[in-house]
Length: 265
Image (cartoon, rainbow, N blue to C red; front, side):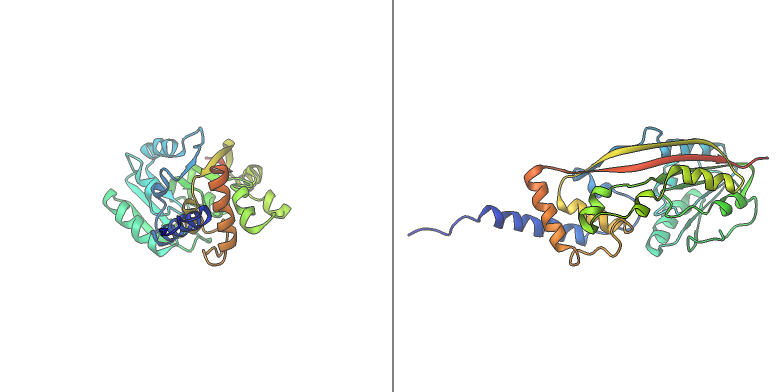
């Protein structure tokens, strides 16, 4: 007599795929904390250290605004917050998370649609910051900044993680490739009456070590593959899973730029 045959390599791979995808599809993606990806994905960090730079400016500010704060994690990392600190956020789960994190620090979180106008008066803040804003409303930033005030932001640059995006969506048109150019940000800031005092850009290596990391990332960063669900993109996920298992981590490149602008006065 012979016992049951061992699972074939393809059966074992399919079982791993199902387990990894099910795990990543079930975990919460609230907030802007990516610690779930520890050991499953890596990303180089920009050399300028946005959180450190932001914290330094917070320590010297009297009134500050963090636009599109997410779950408030980056703002909360600043050791010192100004006496008057506000943050805006549009997604209800993030609003609750940011409020719980920032309220004990004396900061208020304002529910906002992420469209102009900002819900604040003219010249309300001497510091405005934002990390990875979906859109930057330069005229509104200029309006709420006090004369002599500073805007500091780290933004997503052009063609960020396009290797992954194009695996799911196919080649992107030229308009998509040209979007989020740092020089466009400079021109828009200057058109709003601000002086750009720093502008730096870098491309950074990103590695996805398993398909669960890809699923989690696309669920969390929803604008990468709009409307992403496991069911809608199951063939592409299976193909990528096999590629990772046979070739090693899937490599992409993120684009980031730092822009700092000041309001004359």
